[in-house]
Image (tube, rainbow, N blue to C red; front, side, top):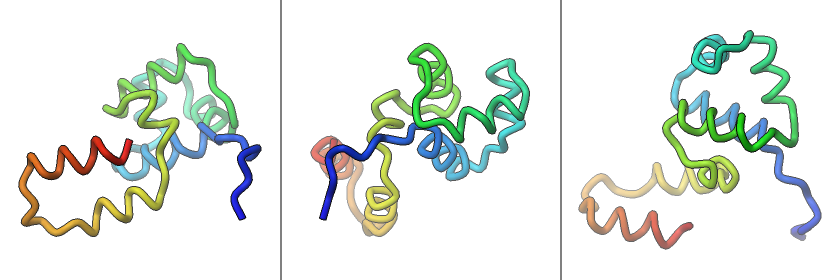
Length: 98
């Protein structure tokens, strides 16, 4: 059963995207101009200020919506797509998933 009242935990999503990109908290902190402890607190937070979220998204190379809509299931499905799919078809699939 799915609950629509479950809050989106932006910090956890940032953490997973950062990990998938093999980036350490220290590297993200350096790029943001903050301490590693600040990044740790940010990743433990459910909500993050829009301005900070925009900076994080830029550093991670994803859109703000990409962070907000991130799901482990989508990543797993994406990774299971055969490598023989053409780039045009891949773009169509990615767009339709959004």
